[in-house]
Amino acid sequence: MKVSKNLRLIASIREFLKDRFNLDEDKADELQTIENLRKGIEFRGTNLWVLIFAIIVASVGLNVNSTAVIIGAM
Image 1 (tube, rainbow, N blue to C red):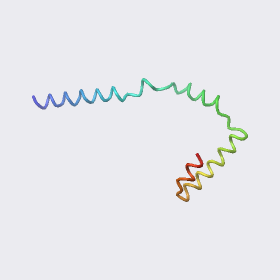
Image 2 (tube, rainbow, N blue to C red):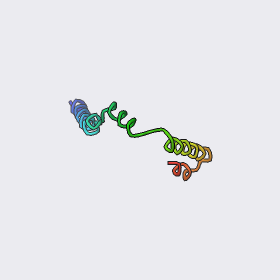
Image 3 (cartoon, one colour):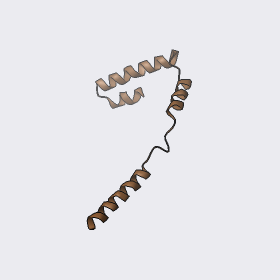
Image 4 (tube, one colour):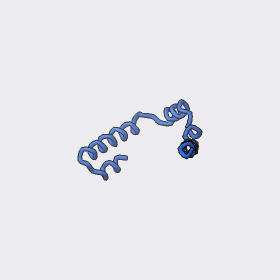
């Protein structure tokens, strides 16, 4: 009988936590998000060059284990 109460308590706590930490309600529509990103971001010209150089700087920062360089690349 005591085991049954403990199991019910654990199950009820688990359901409470599952309900509280459920992210499905706040989830955005994936297709709409991808479409908005594609509309708002152009990988041409200056944007592309800045991205390439930021990747290079971040790679160098990773190779020399420099947190400051990695943050600077961001």
